Length: 295
Image (cartoon, rainbow, N blue to C red):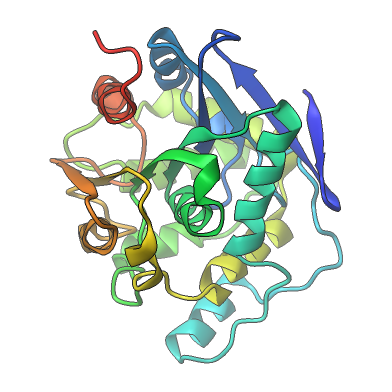
């Protein structure tokens, strides 16, 4: 897999779709690797004419792990954040947004449509603030602005996300399936066998609990974006699952209210995931929003 040198780190990435396609950067969420993008969804996007850039964020998968950079455990970081205490973090969402811009430089993209999910949506929002000329359109899905009330999910979902880390690939397969059975939502099939395969492959590509802790610290150490997003003039689509147990729908609604002219799409019965049943709607929404591949 190719790697791009971006500052002091390397990012593992893939380019998919027609070489002359319209650039679309897909930014994955917390603790997840580029393989978490479902192949079926990527195929629908590339079939519509997108050239899709997917990558491992810093500290996961085959991208650079910041070994030796310390951060509190996710549970301790959340406790400090809830107590309104500073959360020590070796980097923030601003740094992760700069990673994406650097990766775009590496592949020769002056600008691109940007689609981020969960933490990836936060990174995409930060890109629209820090480098608006590089963002043709913004799509922020199942994410929030950093507002405290929106960032607190249902206890069961949060505890599942922060549960014991697997010790081998077989355990990872079970943990991944069980997590997304909780997160997916009542109206969609979570695709259990596919989830187990993804969990196993994620473990084999790069199991990095310390990196997961650093990513959580980056989220919690970053300032709230609600007011700043009022400066964004990038055409914005906000997508959220009506049944999201991890980032409440209020997070999507607040994001859409914060960004002038943003369009909000609430998907009934969808939780915090990308199950097969939602792929056609997502591909259609992004194509309509960007004006690419209509019909």
